[in-house]
Length: 276
Image: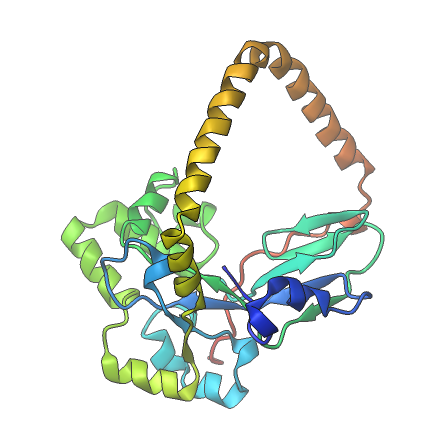
């Protein structure tokens, strides 16, 4: 979720509207959810504690609390720490991985936001362990799992979910993901490592009580049903030609790229760690 902190009325539109016209992209540093129970069902309305990004913390506070904030996990965050970026729509723009943007014709003028953030809900539900496992075809070994996951915690979570019993998985989840130590939580909250963010919970609860979610779901189901009836007769006819056209466009686009525009996509990256 986008957390447009620092703006009047908690407005993403106003936040982006205040960005200088010469800026091509803005980076939202990510905050990571810190769940306090192992039975979360609806993360957006049940999680209020988040670990702040390195970019929004004084250096001495970050490194001074690093070990306590990490709790024996591979990194400060369980998963990525390089935020997400929003780009101004313009010609020659394309995603550069899942975290940044690239332009074929020029260097992207990028700024990092000082207060606003993106809230990353990381393994907020215990079932997230098995759902990720079920989507991956890698063997649960330290070598093969590198084909599926770039970050150490994701690899460890996949191996546990693939080899451990339900009881062992739950114990591992409680130790690695759930924050139950009240004294440690209070300490990290006071230092600013952790923060409480209630706005998403309040907004979602208001939308739910107003019936917005149920009406949207109903409308979507009706639209899908109508589209399905209209398109089923033409699907088999158009599939072959569209696939061929798609392959041709992909091939042509690759041939048109020069070496500069084929830079490697920016992967998910862990936050800064302690020097060995």
